[in-house]
Length: 379
Image 1 (cartoon, rainbow, N blue to C red):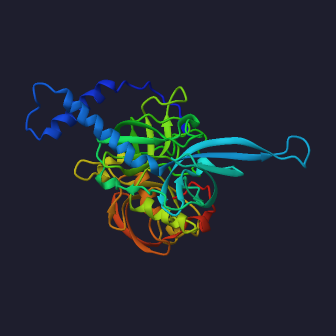
Image 2 (cartoon, one colour):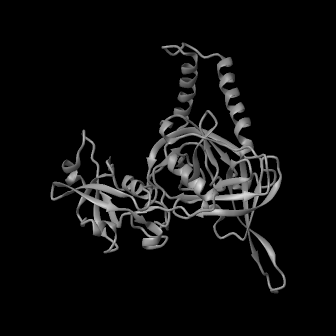
Image 3 (cartoon, one colour):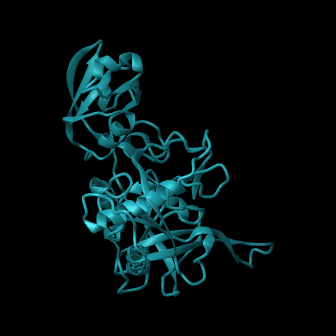
């Protein structure tokens, strides 16, 4: 589990949660006005909906336990030492499991514990370091695969349910823990906030949730109330090292689904590469890129390498990219996503401002790993 030490204290969300419960009951009644009182039957109906949801989704959730093989003294004696624990979920009934890359990184052996308590040795089919995702395979059939939702349909304050293996509680029997809360925010950017992160990984556009997430929850699914996976639980922000109401999940959208399918096929995920370092536009330049009152754009702070796509197209430091392939650029993080998910080899039009003059350039998107190798900060 990745955690982060915040700069400010977290605020209580209990009162807000109670209010949401009653709002949900009111909405379920279909009335235009909230009723004067709620009956016990209303609360029991909501409770039953939650119970049925868990019964539906928990068979798809697994516990992940990893080990290292060590020699305690004699090279002829090897022992299996517990190393880490996390969560995962079934993406294919034939035994394919999705989890976070950081859950299984550095492990010599991986064990997956299903909801029925059966333990299986797992192999890594493929992992994606930058996206912090991995697909495992176990020798099991007829597993219950999850159903995916889509970020486009996720709204702030919707119900959210985290399901996984916090503190290794499901290591023995595979019975995942379930917590609930709401979608607290969308589009959170954590790449620069995580301690020790050298931008090997990209943690942007995350779903923030108040559902309790703790060490060991990483790699587990975040469900909506329909039982669809809307995110992969990945990080928390905390002073104490445990849940304080701010968890984060990689969102499920078409790009994430493509990554998981690519990993399942045993193929490398290819990210587009432009060859620039960028930052958000400073307030002093807001008027240059304002659109309907909203500041957008990403300022180029460097061109690297000197023979990369951006350099070949004539882009320079201090240029402000305002459109990429016809899409308005909302900021640095948005540009990273737009470039990264553009197919390698594509020719793309970049619209930018240079000394307040709008210009256009055509760039050919390169392969990030081939251009820089892994673990580089450039976009």
